Image (cartoon, rainbow, N blue to C red):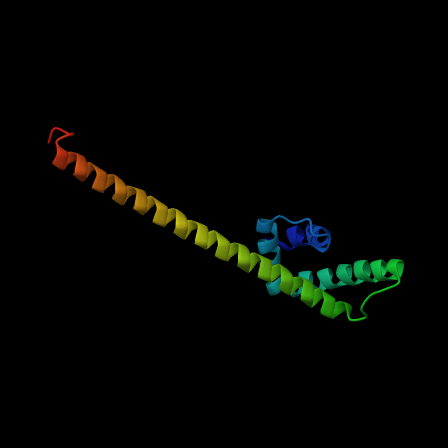
Length: 117
């Protein structure tokens, strides 16, 4: 991801509008690019500050709120990765189970003479 693409995704990230794929790429870029990280901090500070003023509530640790939001996003991506891995494992096990059942069934049919072997 380029810096231009990351900067374009700052506000959608803050508003929670990124897809999972975009979120993963955005987090990777933010973790490695100090300029884009600073840009995110500025926009996040302004956005959260305005929201807190409008609501009359809030924490005064906006940088901590950003770190919390980033950590939650990282956990989401990690959880999605684990679920995807588990899905692949279950699909693979199901494939092999069906294949074994089919082979055993063909063997039974062969012993009973249904296959003409």
